[in-house]
Image (cartoon, rainbow, N blue to C red; front, side):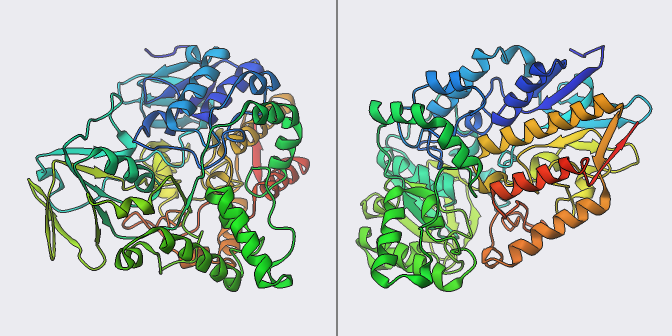
Length: 533
């Protein structure tokens, strides 16, 4: 299929951001087509079906806010929803608003080229389809470009090789299997307890230990649901006014102004709240090393308290980064899993992998025979989904080259050299440091305000000014350098991808501040953008 008449808007991706972008295109009277590599909507929740996959933002907040009726009718079953429930919600939204018909599924975009004379983007898919549109909205996801590690002998393994990011839709029966897993980021931390439960044995190959906080997940009562529906306007307002897109504030008193007993009370309160909120106990926890050390010591004591073997505990406790400067994981029994007789931890910093063989994993000091090897090795985060496409602007700019030294954007929305192209929930925006459903709503609404402005004023093109993009990108990096985040080798910095330029990619100033900066640009006539005709 190839579209003949040019579209107003073409959207790449059918996750939360892409679906909302398509919906808003319709609401604004635009012709729109979405292209999605999967055979249905869902984005990251379509692909990541591994055992234990769960969101680390509370269900009541990790949902659309644009339609009060949608909020009123949907019922979440748990505080932190699992992948099947989130996917069911996304599919419900797609069906409720007739969005499936706006998308072409099983169409992976491989290239896009802008024709300056026609003022149109031509987008080509892997299957050979071509579509043309005036505006190109890239909702490609920050965690969607799979990282397959370059480990010697990986292709020689004769057992079953699985990836958490591409888990079989039909599931996988681990009963009686000798299983190994490489990677202990969020996917590994969430999946390990369930893999251990089902497998005959589980060997966890860990290079970098991570901090993880229990989710303390539980069913939501009908009373809680009713209260949330009643107070959603206030809850959403608080979320948009917050740093992370959730209605939670830091402890009301500063760390330096309280005694040890109240500090412990504060940490305990946030620990019991579960998940990433612990990292935001005090407002300066990512800036002041003393505060971060206190949080780290509290978390380490919690971790040690549930692990029976002190040596195993030592291997599971991070020592190479301040707590939270790599994203804190949210788990359900991760550390306790290492008390099981069928679980073994291999510290790859002391005993590195030499090679994968036909029968399993050979390290410098050991050999591990496996039936199944699971790769929980993450993503080429923030930029990979864009740079793996051949995106070319009208003056010879190529996205992969433009971003070769790190992503360059103005406000995380537009890239110089690529007119009429917008990026959502990617580098340069609050994205992965906030509630990405609400960040998507904000960015989509802002983009369509800009498109409407162009149409009303007779402008046919818009792109980021090069100097504005450089200034914004430098501001992001400078702000991050004023925190503890640069002390970690995290995917926020691209450190997990060999050869990737080390630079801080998301906007760290907080969701509310990001909204404020976008509104300032709008009020100044879209400052930092070149509007042409």
